[in-house]
Length: 356
Image (tube, rainbow, N blue to C red; front, side, top):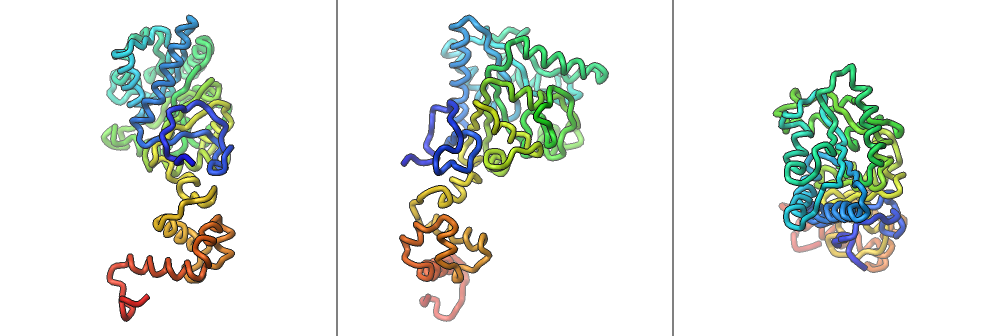
């Protein structure tokens, strides 16, 4: 059997939850060793789409994201443009969001970010670049958002949408409470989102409280969606999004209903998924000493029992029957594990330290 963490260069959509180890998962996902390798694969998919559209004489409409997650993707696209001749002359882009109010020249604006990391280094036509305008007068914002939606529609809709995910589960700036039918609009940023952005703004007091964002329905109409997440700080929200119920409290869960969405993760972002955190619940395991220790400590926490009180039934009812069969009996296994854990405690004193 292939390792669950084996590099998979093909990230094309596959039905989620079809195999035993992924049966709790509701969104297709691929796991990479690190964000650098993953970003190259995502960039290759985008490049392939651009070239395919060029061969047909058609425009390629991309929805783009900002933040730290897509930076390496943009670096690879720039490299392909300079070294492999990838042209962006047929590409039309629409960015997900922008802080409001925000001038284009501000170093923290997404307009500035996109030009620094991508647009200034490729041959895209300036008139084909669309980033929400953070300088629009407040009384004109409603019509501006309607027009932004119409411009996407007139371009033929989004062929590909690149996403990141916030700790609140936001995609774009669709914060908790966003509706599945929401369109491009101005929103109030969640406090957690502003805290996460505070280092870029030299303090939370400098982070704008509002933003313009594409809506959930705008994103869901994309023909293809790839969401990227890196690092253990995203692990909890990734688990809730991939394995939890659909809820407006975690807007990214709406992607469970998209017919062509893939999450691209590094190992750290995937650690809370069941197949990695508690693999004995989704299939047979190779029971290393480390995994046995992890599983038995987990079982104690779940059953609220001490190690020496765990029973055969506890093991059998919690996906660990194969471990029980391997070790013989709960009694013997409990004693052995108790002794192993005891020896990891520095300064343990219980009479003769050479006697278990």
